[in-house]
Image (tube, rainbow, N blue to C red):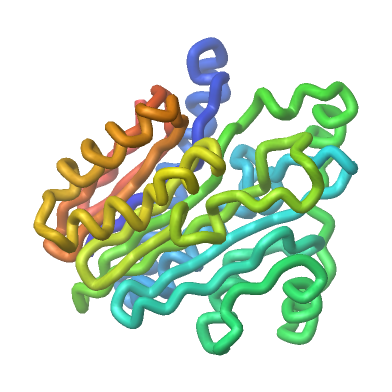
Amino acid sequence: MKLIIHGGFFSESTTNQEMKKAKQDALAEIVTLSYAYLQSHTALETVSFAVSLLEDNLLFNAGLGSQIQSDGKVRLSASIMDGTTRKFAGVINIQDVQHPIQVASLLLNYEDSVLSGEGAVHFARENGHAHFNPVTEQRLSEYEAKLNQKNNLGTVGCVALDASGKLAVGTSTGGKGFEIPCRVSDSATVAGNFANAVAGISCTGVGEDIVSVALSAAIVTRVTDGFTLKEACDKSFAELKTIDGFAGVIGITATGEVYHTDSHPYMVWASFDGSLQVFN
């Protein structure tokens, strides 16, 4: 059993050691709790659990820590994928829910498995997800000062390998801040979140760059074709470099290879496979 999570990028790491340590500590706690959960749950259940914890943490740009779009509203996107069944589900620009990853998880059971906007909200309400306002005082202050696009670039995500050898991935984002309302990120697409029976990848960074090279799907496809996870990431990041792309990834293979890499430093991550590792 193996587990890796990420909390996006953050520029504060170079100057704000207190913020850096807070994020390291939060990731360490969440990955430890999630690995304990994995002992008695499937990979699919575990990624929803882990991403929900990340969505509840103000330090990360997802759920409660999400950015505010240019019209003053928060719109959330998340997706989840079962590597065994190859079923993908997601919500795009959903509003006023606490855990978009859990709404995406419910959609795994439906033929129409990716919903957006009002339809996603209606589906959430019908399935017991109450109204929740994710706007915090800090985010509102940043929005009003037009500064929040400089903070917490990225998303949150999780890749898990369970005791049965099954893989699953989940990714959630609060956007990049001040974007055109209803802009679609990579997080609820197979570019940013993809798994099969061989490998699983979750991305963070600039969504448009990630979509342009189909990053998650490209890496998983290469592993399926015989690349090691590192080789697949290196090849895909070489392609990303040709467009000066900004991204980071975490991944696990069915054979237990765990890997993370980024095009720029300071992606925050943590992993657990019997021992804890945290970005430092």
